[in-house]
Image (tube, rainbow, N blue to C red; front, side, top):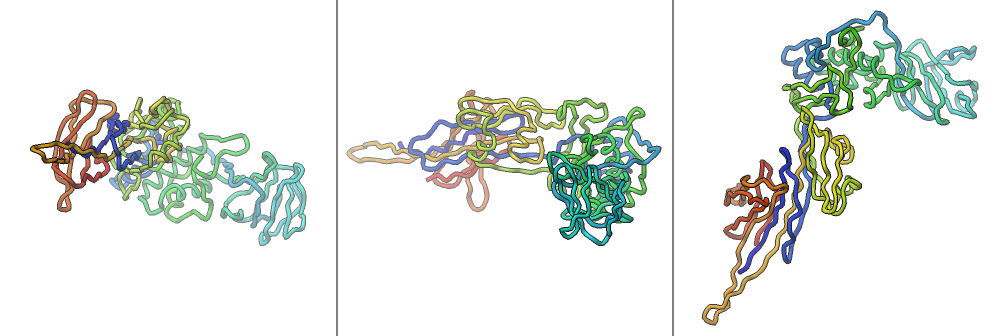
Amino acid sequence: MARVLVLVALAFVAGGLVLAAAAPAASAATSASRLYVKGDGFGHGVGMSQYGAAGYAAHGWNDQQILAHYYTGTGIGTLSSSPNVTVLLATGAATFKGATTIAGSATTLSASKSYTVSASSGKLVVKNSGTTVGSFSPPLTVSGSGALTLSGKGRYDGSFVFTIASGHVQTVNDVPLEDYVEGVVPSEMPSGWPAQALEAQAIAARTYVLTTTVSSAFDAYSDDRSQVYGGVGAETTATNNAVTATAGQVVEYQGGLAETPFFASSGGYTESDINVWGSNFSWLVGVSDPYDNSFDNPYYRWMQSFSISAAARDLRGHFSGTLRGIRLLKRGVSPRIVQAQVVGSRGSRTVTGATLEADLGTFSTYMVFSTLHDSVSSSVSIARVRRRVLRHRYYYVSGSVFPAQSGVKVVVERHSGGRWLTVHTGKLSRSGSFRARVSGRGTYRVLYAGLAGPTVSVG
């Protein structure tokens, strides 16, 4: 008897698929393994989804309704005064322009000239065209009558404060709150989105910077470690109008400021902060986000794939032996991954969803995994009938599922005439294996739990 054995080993894990290692077939001709990651959304998932907010605005919701939805039980308050905030713009020797004064010094500067700042022996040395203007003890604050320019970064309202940290110059922008928010909104949300979404973003950004101090040296980073701040150069008429319309407005919970994290896309449901950061703020609980797929959201549903060797490199240290796949252990309410197990042939390790996202470079922790392996082999059976030697070839598609779910259907399809035709439907055995005899040579694939496996050629 002759046969070609196609091994497709899959595993179903809470809506996902993880490939189990199949028993090796004799005389294997081809073998391929790949990790597929099917995901939803982009970002940590806590608080306001920006695509979702735009979708709500497009459906007639105003800024306060949007914020009340994403930050449960909150309301809108107004600041009694508008403070300045400090934002880290850059680390390293700096070049600036537009300044006319140095705080606490009689030294004057020319707004039309560029100056460099470097650190030397604990002092900040300011030069113009190679000529030393002065040597100052930190902090060194420079300001002018208009926006200042930081070379390589852009233009900013307020003043620049230069300090020294670990021997390097740090450039911090000391800027009025409303000017800061004008630089954040267009950096975080497209200016062409509905005005009510932009206004919700302005209120969330204003509140966020007031509730999340990074260090004693500055309040916020200028990138997504805090919220993206592009300064004067990022401003647009639409986003500035949104800031003006909401001037001084903040999100409050029971009379105090409520921390207001936000992110790009939820994939349809936001996450409770206890499942992401371990805190348990009453207003940061997962909620349905039905309009997150608005405005051609490219992150609403996504797929990434890796060769098993590449995935094994990314996940090294989390398993022993050969990488078999990833098994879900615990999900949050969205349901983003809270804990999962990286499964190896000789040992496994439990990791967080955030670890998987970081190691694999995915868009969020809202994921399911499919590790697919297939191989092709053949053997020949010989029979002697009345002095004649007969050789016959049989074709099979077979494999296994891990973990086993007895009775789940497996469909085998054959590509013919430009379309896929079902040639076999069967159920898994108790051990999770299946085997289907097919009619002959051709290209086949296996469908299991909504996943189309890789194609294999028989014969």
